[in-house]
Image 1: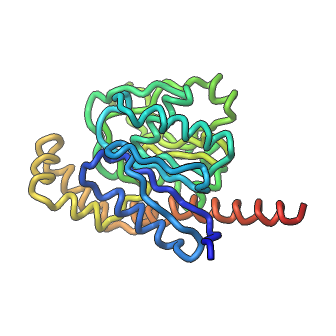
Image 2 (image 1 turned 90 degrees about the vertical axis):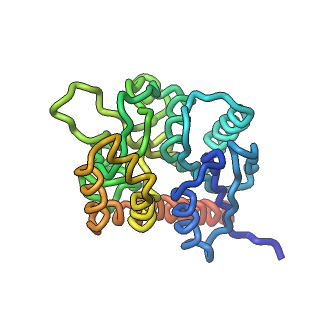
Length: 269
């Protein structure tokens, strides 16, 4: 008997680099095992791709420059273009978010002056306060931000043409005049993405921070106070724990509801 559950494709963009993000995505998706089947595709390392019979696509974060070339780029962007055309449900995370913003011509993607790492406040825009994706999160809400690149200089003419919307911006910095980076975008009614890591959980983040290698690296790049503050923030249930339990699960839940409604409507015709 064939499995008629909706299909979720997890696009692993980590290029064979060990990480906590993929584990977190898998654990969130596993919450919906009764409602959907899922499979991981190693895009950058093995050039693996799902077909368009999948209903939901979650494209992970990953290391490196979003401008790097590789055999995977052309088929990846072709898949995203087809997914958009067919109204597939897609969530882009961090590295994938940068790729999507660049590919759809919505903004520039530039190198940051300094690596961003830690738990930061993310501010909703007017569109973000009205978007179902961010329901249940405070304003600002908090998330793990880890990146060397940034999405800036939005082309608002292109945003209007695609009916895309900026949902969130990075923290307000009164001590510098740098442009605030874009942190979340609704690309279409079914495609969204975040610059930060909504999948990150306190457990994985804490384990990451407590390894001697990462501890030394963070203290060297920032300072001991930054390291200790980040550890302390992981204990706050209203920060990344809430984002972890709300945002990506909400996307999957809303996508499954939409798919079910669409199927019922087609059966009625």
